Image (cartoon, rainbow, N blue to C red; front, side, top):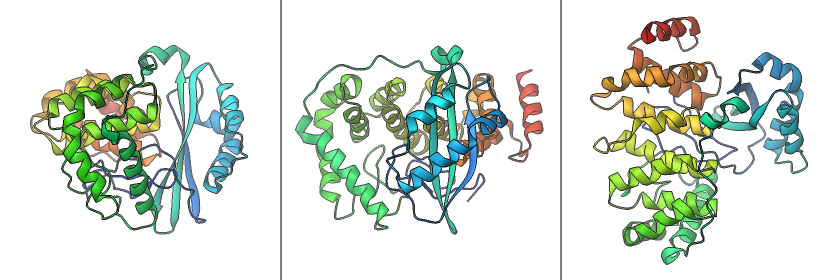
Amino acid sequence: MSTPKPRSLLTFALVTACASTPARPPAPASTPAAPAAAASELVAIDMFGTRQISREQLLAAREAELRAYFEAMIRDDPAFDIAALVAGLDKLGDFATVAPALIGYYEPGGMKYYLTVDFVDRADAARRMPFLPAPTGAHADPAGLIADWITYETRIFALMGAGEMSPQRVACPAFHCIGDGTHPQVKALADRFAAQVPAHVDALAAILRDDRDARRRAAAVYLLAYAADGPALVQQAVGAFRDRDSLVRNNAMRVVVDIAAFHPGLEVPLEPVLAALDYPTTADRNKASAILDGLLARPGAAARHPEVIARAGATLLAMLRLEQPNNHDFAYSILKALSDQSFGERDYAAWDAWLASARR
């Protein structure tokens, strides 16, 4: 494996990491699942997205509450008052949104967790949260595909949680798959998606675009990956990058991660990816950076370097400073591709000097 070091990971204890190439860091989703086993460690507390306070000030004011949040989450303690934690964080400045994100990784000695507090300064809200109005439509489930996808996804995560299915990406008949669709417990459903989705693309696209139920929108974008029209899928998925719901954005970007890495013949517009790199959540940055990493590995990608440096250089350096692997590792990979340099991943002075020089 090449650097940055890939990690086998969990997000609140189980989410598949199927959306990245074997030589790149995995790209986790953001959906909570079962609590972790007893051997768990909080490795680091990060923050991202605000100019109003420093990490040192955050820890001085709220470290005890953040560590209590970690302990409650790994115990799956329903009594912990997350709203009170967020309200306390919100008092540290003038923010449009504040959210803690806890992500865990399998390590030989037990689960290793990283907690990131994501801030959006109110002054940056229009730029960093350019989301569409909440959809209001109500659409029929075409051939029951949405319900079947939710069943499929539930079974996949259960199989992974039981150790009966690897979270690693496998070859699939679609532009993106979750899990191993050949497993006996899900094969019939996976075969049905491949066979029936092409006849229901318009209905699924309408759900993704306009259904008021975010879970149905999130399922629809995964199902659309089984359609044959790659350019249309890119357009549909990229459009969903601006969905108000973080899970819908996560799923849409995850589909495009696979397209960027494994379908080089399909063009992916750069600007929406660079915009998403600075969206509010850790998962947004993870998926957007995974897409960008894939695009920069394509032939002829050097022509895109100046735009990426100008538009996203500062964001990438901010991500590099994080301990959170799913942001830091992709930022390091991207910076090395852009610069053709191999400064150390924590040599911030060298990377700052490179960016200043590249911008000149």
